[in-house]
Image (cartoon, rainbow, N blue to C red; front, side, top):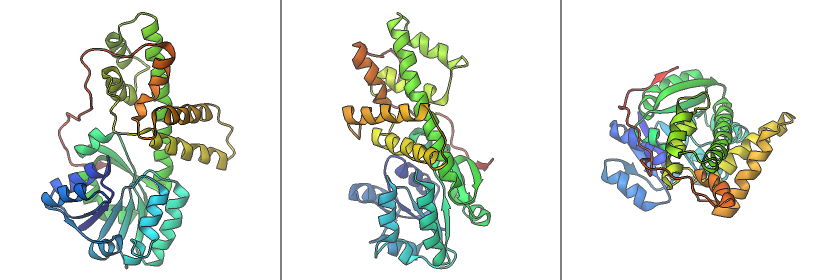
Length: 313
């Protein structure tokens, strides 16, 4: 299967890297020529436009920063849609709005091609080793056709139902992670102001009912002081915004979500759109004139588990 990949950002480069490492016939496109050159030097191909890419490959993967960018890549004159033909598959791996996936999916279907949405979850460090989780929505037979590709990009793979369902679940899980991150900042601040050793606090939370994936990962780079989680403030605002829109669409009177949304919008304004999302805890550090630091924590996360072929759950 020939695979085309558009978007070599923090996550996309790692997903595409897994394909290249596993000897897939890979063609890449990105606005950053240096990223493209790096992939080409390792055996990938590149091409002039998304339209030409779609004409050349069997599976087109997009992993882009926003619905607006994806729409441009898909629908412009030299975009993906104009290069599609019967039975080609488009897999949208960006975190996006389910209604936008469905809208673009209808345009894909008019070309007799097949749309799927396939966002990932689990952190960039797991994307790098092919151990990230992947949700996939859309036609089951198309999902099964691209399983060899999915199984090298991710470890736990879940078919979620119809097109758009994967994007809804991704927005929900990202919302939960964002809530957890804010609460971790509050917990660590209370511990610090109460005179607790933060390394001991980290371990106590880790073995308790208060533990979470977010604590085990993001708390480490917070305690180190790098905050480097390879995920930025603007992306959290985008994702929690999607969740907020979903709740309004279904007339759900949420209470926690609006608060968290405003906290991250404030954090984005204060520290910048491209600040690491875990810097949200700095709001409390600054307010309380403290730093949440402890010895022995890494400046960035690495996945130490061995790379394994993925499987469907």
